[in-house]
Image (cartoon, rainbow, N blue to C red; front, side, top):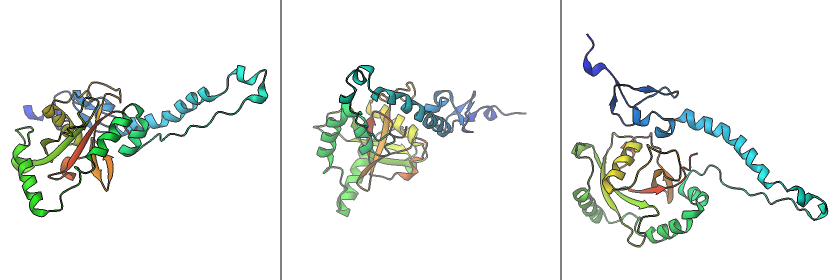
Amino acid sequence: MTQLLDIGEHCSFCGQIDFLPFKCSCHQTFCQNHRKPENHDCKDWKLKQKQQKPTEIHENSFKDLPSSQSLFPDRSNWKPPTLKTTETNPTNLQGTLKSNSNALNKLKKFFTKSSKSIKPSKNPSKKIIELAQLKNKSKGDPKVPTTERIHLQIQVIDESSNIDQNTKFPIFISRSWPIGRALDSIASNIGLKNLNNRTNNPDERIFLFKLIDNDFIKLNTSDRCSGLKDGDNLFIVRGSDPSV
């Protein structure tokens, strides 16, 4: 006889059980909240988007063509338009900054003021004290066992963030979570507006970055948090997804 707990499947993105699971073309199972491709970082969906992109670029390129007025009657004065090159697929935060001109000045100012504060302490004793203080102040989902917790410092880079105060939020997450679920939990605990599961507009979605070898790298929402460690500094950025 089929047990009640045998009905339904666990979501491949957030791990929660769903009694009406959805099977995606990427051969993974998702709950109602993450059934849409853009909500679970679907690789098949991204591949299709990239395949359609050349057509969009080709169509948009007609905007650079000269008008009939510029060609006739004084055709000799027409000069070919300057080709504008843009980084269509930035993989780090620097590429994101170039593609988001509205927030460029604010983000540059933020990282200039933050450059000193994000450098890790070289004093072992000070590191131990700082980590102990971080663990004592961190908040998160109380259901996460103490042995499974990763304690982080979170900084928000958003239009509503106060870059002069450079606020750091002490947060703990579960090492077994996907990055996407961790981002949802972090946003909830610090009171940050999170529309990732409700909108396809990349300008309204939030993304998580980590400083690696002096470069800010976007964390993939489908990766596990086990790659993070206690004391890591992470940055939440609202804006265009650099992977699309």
